[in-house]
Image (tube, rainbow over all chains, first blue to last red; front, side):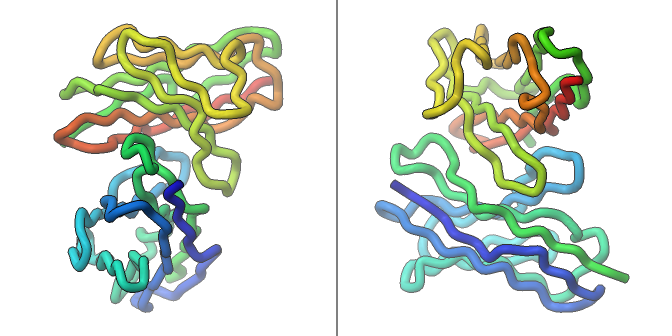
Length: 112
Length: 114
């Protein structure tokens, strides 16, 4: 079935540093790919998505490009802020196309 | 955009009692709703998938008699934790999906069983 692997955290950065969170996937076909963000004590919010190969999703300064050659969807932000401290999840639909399959989550802590 | 309201956000209950968590899609009709459980510092674990008017499909290892799911309408699904015990303490999150908005998550419910 479809699966996703993302780098383990925690990732600790200083404000204005560059952030990369690696995500690779195994899938049948070319499903949509998602990044979700979870702030402390809250549910998940969709951060960005890409629906086909070479698409770039972007939102709030974050970007991720759907790369089928490397089966990757790495999340990047050029200059992080303290408010970006959260847990980030890479996800894709299951083989049946219904339920989402999540990576293990990467906790990011941005220090002033 | 789509909004999913999950209630309550926090609940504390005594061992042996039951707790009901509601999940409502506010401005769209959800074809499918999902219930997840999240342990501290871990990823989401899918518990069950429910479609309106039919029985929920539970993931392997999830006790259907323990975690009762009702999906009575296209905008409401409930999860009832029956005879709760301290090991049921967790963060529960619902998600609703439709063809327009994709997956939308509730804000979660922190359950503490004492």
